[in-house]
Image 1 (cartoon, rainbow, N blue to C red):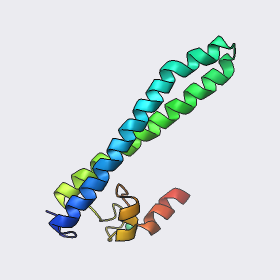
Image 2 (cartoon, rainbow, N blue to C red):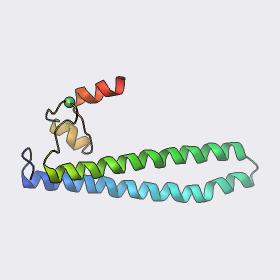
Image 3 (spheres, rainbow, N blue to C red):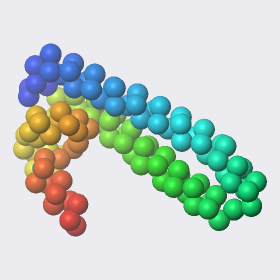
Image 4 (tube, rainbow, N blue to C red):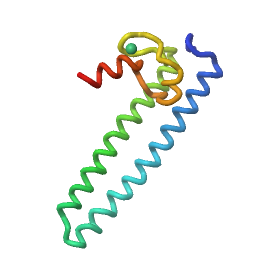
Length: 118
Ligand SMILES: [Zn+2]
């Protein structure tokens, strides 16, 4: 049980995270469908080069979605073990406004800014 959040808040963040993961799964489905159909359509028009470009852009989206799905799963695990809301880098509290906007974040604003600039 989380020390930072009461049972009600834990449930609220859990449903936020589950909704995010659901949305992500729908996105991945869409991209996978596009991957099945688009390259062939493009190749039929004899434009293999842009077909490849589309392909790699979609692969990149899938890779990022997979990373996000992992981050969401980790956040759900942190809700269970009570470390949700603690910055993974400095151990400080992540502000609730940030958690509401980005419930799968692992770092507070300052640490996230620092790790982005390195
Ligand atoms: Zn921090």
